[in-house]
Every structure is written in structure tokens, then in C-alpha cells.
Length: 88
Image (tube, rainbow, N blue to C red; front, side, top):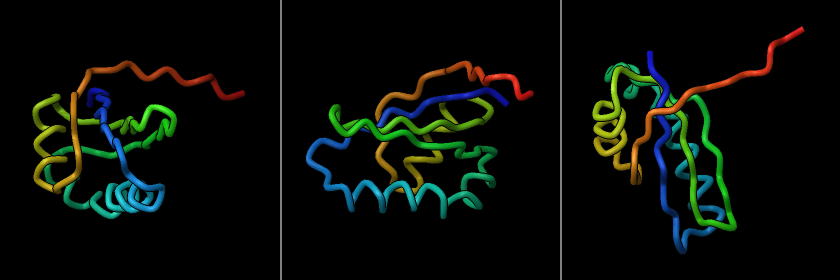
């Protein structure tokens, strides 16, 4: 599975609306899984009114389609590389 970042522009959204959208991502995991997509995590950047949601999936088009089908806001979908600190 490849890693993708969905860029979500949340201009004018309240903190509560953002929390609800993030919760919907988590609750939508079964639907994402049916599309071959997995929501890993979301990072909100309040000062930029942006959310970056990390997904794994077969390709950017499938990740975008899964988000659109679930009525989740989605701007660009970018291929990404995940780097994790080694665990000791």
C-alpha cells in the first residue's frame, strides 16, 4: 500500500465542525476498507485552516474517490513517504 495525504481546506470551519469531520473519518473506516483505503491519521493546522489526512491505498484516485463518496472534504491528494523514528 502506498501513502497519500488528502489536503482539506477548512476555511471558516469551527473547532466543533472540524472535530466532527475527523470523527467521521474514524467512523468511516469500514467504508474506506471496502475501497482498499485506510485512514491513518489527520493533522489539523488551525492557523492555516487546513487539515492533512494521511491514508494508505492503491492510488491517489481511489483515495480521493473514497473521500468524495463519503462526503468528506478533499482538495488535493498527494503521494507521500512516511518516515518513522526507529523504536528502541
